[in-house]
Length: 167
Image 1 (cartoon, helix red, strand yellow):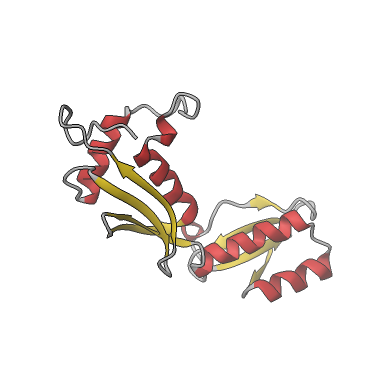
Image 2 (cartoon, rainbow, N blue to C red):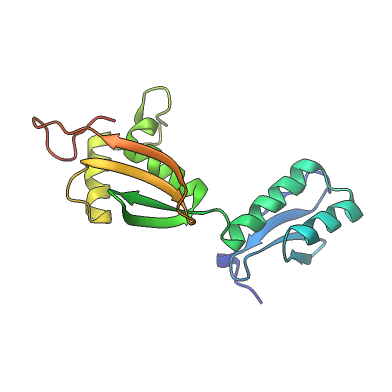
């Protein structure tokens, strides 16, 4: 039996009342749960066939395909600083980290009330966690095939410590 610690949170299948979907991180497969039974999918063709047979909405199919892509690693990206790999993981999480590091998520119109840290402190913490001496230079997010998705240039300010740069 698969541990629930390796499963994503169950999400409702809107076009199938009582059904849920989630990702089994052990197998990397998306699955639908109906009346205590799970159906696991080994890729896009299986998901599309199931959708046709069971009348799933396009929104539900799109979410299952996203779970499948996450499980198979197709949504994996890499965060680099000055060309040096820092982190590898799912695109959703690393885009948030990228936007935090660039300061975008610390802008007043985007800052969450639950974000209880200042930008400079966040940069300092992340520098220590990621082994970065100073945020001088280029931060980039890449697909695993090397294609660049996002880039940010940190501007040096000699009057502030390395963690005090503005995006």
